[in-house]
Amino acid sequence: MKKIKLLSIILLVSLLTSILFTGCKDDNLETIKLVEVTHSVFYAPQYVAITQGFFEEEGLKIELTNGKGADKSMTALISGQADIGFMGPEASIYVYNQNKKDHAVNFAQLTQKDGSFLVGREKDEDFNFDKLKGKTIIGGRVGGMPEMTLEYVLKKHGLDLEKDVNIRTDIQFAMMAGAFTGGEGDYVTLFV
Image (cartoon, rainbow, N blue to C red; front, side, top):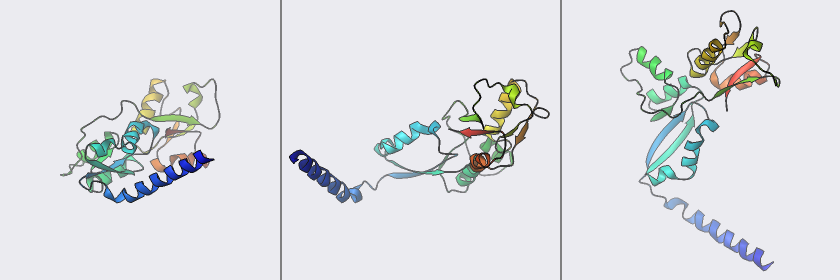
């Protein structure tokens, strides 16, 4: 019983001390507004660095937002709502090809693979890509990295994109999971 009281007192003192010093943080941190295309376990190292204070140790405060798609993330970047954007390189290419005076510059590669998975409605222990023939796949925005990766993989497995499958590109990136759970499509590409 005495141990429980002692632990409770120590916990209370620690809590009060942390509350007292909450406003005493170093205000000399440089704020970086970072927009990512989606929240994903794919970006786990970034989340660890933010939550463990690694950026603050380097004098940076990260304000992280979810752009809900590369097109919206790029809009936030070029409009000044974000300083850095995590998204596929295609968004930069589209802006550059519009001959915009102010365009994004890619300066780093965060990942080497696409972070999306092909998800079906039912468990299939013996899946093969031929089973996609005649099916509808929610693939993402035309020209978006998930959709382009899907097309590449389907072609690699011998599927004709015009004849064998119906790839839906009319559903916004942030709405794909909801559309699929609502009954749209037979398959969907989703980030983890």
